[in-house]
Image: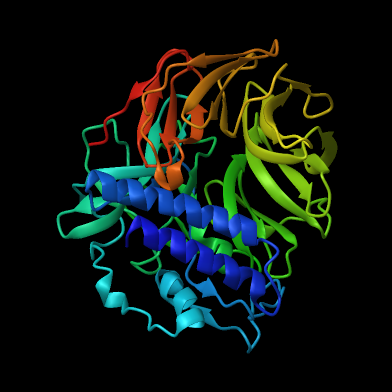
Length: 446
């Protein structure tokens, strides 16, 4: 597929999403993900590797989306996850062709053309040209990623520590053609660095997800079950549990949780309105929090789990972007009512907030270093943000142009307790800092 094909397809997809009998309210979000994916594809074509995007972590289960939801399908909002007879599904790898078929009648390609590796989940394998789209670092510095690269028998999805000498392990998928995309770290990661959790970014197209858990460093994976039907968009640890955040078919927010060492997921009742969506989930100390944003207004609230109860406090954001925490300080990237972006933070659980004295253009990621410092990204530029309200630019190792004429951007920034941090780019590269974000260098991926 050429760069022109990507652009043409995006325009077609935009028309489909907004002209179906019931236009999707989340069309802009879906298109943003499509564009992000296209950026990664174009970069991979440019460097000539048969690699795709990936994600990284250390935690308790892997959430993977099994199918694509038809625009006119209807999923029942039932605790046992039953579906109506009208529900119809297509495969994510047919998305491009399905979008074209609805417009110009072209026929979808066969699954057989995908050519993915047939290695079993958990099997050790060598992998090259690994690209990263997300990652996690435990408090003690354990790094783990989920990547897509080249295995001996073809393209593959793998997990592992890119800085170590051990081989990668094949990541679990319900179907070889579906990729797991989101990973996080549990609070027990330091003691059990192989525990892993993940979810699939492609779940904008479906309302049920397949969840897998491992408790032996990725050697074996067990399918788990979420309560009810909902699309999982993020998974985070907190308070000795793992939390899955997402959206039901009717647009309502959904939250489920499980103990870290067992697959015992239960539905959670959270104080989120019918018109609110969950954004920016994050662990905060021994708890968990997220931002609830109203679809119809510029109002947002921090919702924090505090000793068995959920507490809501106002957030000075028209739109929350990315979040992080360090030493109980919450760092939040915000889009203001004037459209500009900035970093805001709270040291008292969201009761009061402070912000940068000036805005940052196109803020894309925030990573808390400690209670006084965070690192934020705006396009290809990284900034060290301090609690005094200043943001100082620092040198970043990646600056090539990305797809769509934009400069490459950083998509995630995370630190351990000693100030060692990592950042990933839209193209799947990994950068490392050993001094709290003051300087960065490329991190080789074996």
